[in-house]
Amino acid sequence: MTTAKKKASTEVTLEGQTLPATQGKMKDTMQVLHEEVTVMAFRLRGDLLLVHQWGQKAVLEMLAKMAGHPVPKLNKDLTVEGDASAYRNMQGEDVMPCRIIKACFVNGASQTNKAVQSHQINKHVRVVGHTAPLHFESVDRCDVEPVKVGPWNDRVVDLRARTLYSNWYCDIVVRFPHTIIGKEKVIAAMRAAGFSVGLCEKRIEKGFELGGFEIESLPTTSIDAILQANRSPEKRFEIPDELRHAASAQLEDVDKRNPKKKAMSVVASVNDAEARHDADAIAQARALLEDSGFAVREVRAEERNGALGETIETRAALDEIVNEETES
Image 1: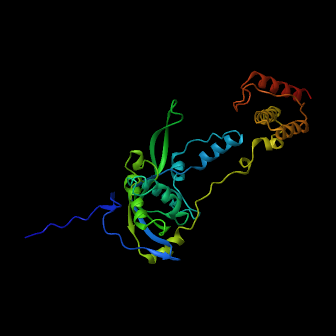
Image 2 (image 1 turned 90 degrees about the horizontal axis):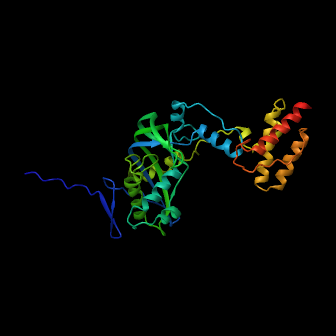
Image 3 (image 1 turned 90 degrees about the vertical axis):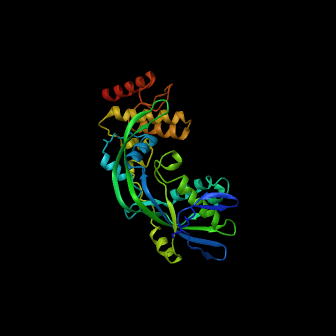
């Protein structure tokens, strides 16, 4: 005679609400500090994880536009973009930023049918460290897929290359004041996050099937090692010196052998200052105009849309300045 094994429970009840839970029994990983703070170690484990970090190319293009510099037109290289899409720490390791994990837990609280409040997780729970190193069975550094980008009324198709991890996990340390929020609520929010929210691109809460995970407890003896591994900050972007300042502050560096280019920079500076009604900036721009040998003029454009020479009046002022420089 055989007896059927009792199926392990995959649900947990908290304050009368039934919440999703991971398979297997959670070990007690609670470590109490100063009688009011609890520290717990967990492992997040999933099957597929698609990430898309801001790339250097996108950052430079965005910053150049914001600072008033010519936007660099860099050729698309899917291999480079795919490799740059991964989150990395200062040591160059593949990681998952702790800030993203924390945001996932906050969203997970909203999936507990009000058993846990999102503001409780956001205010009291901390994922200690900066980045959690990712461990994975395999990785595709150039997962290419067409996507629609741009305004909703003018969408265009673009190709995106992203990093896809298979059978991955990362270890984290969670810290919270147990006198304010119990560990049952913290665990419930974490489980709901893995079951109903997910991490990064094409995650579950967006209607897809990637980024889901289960949580596993880790012994308290592993806390120190995890804290050491997670202390490295995210890798920083390399910003060229010329993009660290607004274009109007670099008029003196414009090539003097190109009078039209210099005139366009001066006109752009004056127009921008007048559009912002910035008297100091207007005075500075006109001083640079005098120092450069150009005649001081009232350069005004009826339409200031950021594109130089778009209005008749701006083009006329440009032609006049360039003609004077050529004649002299």
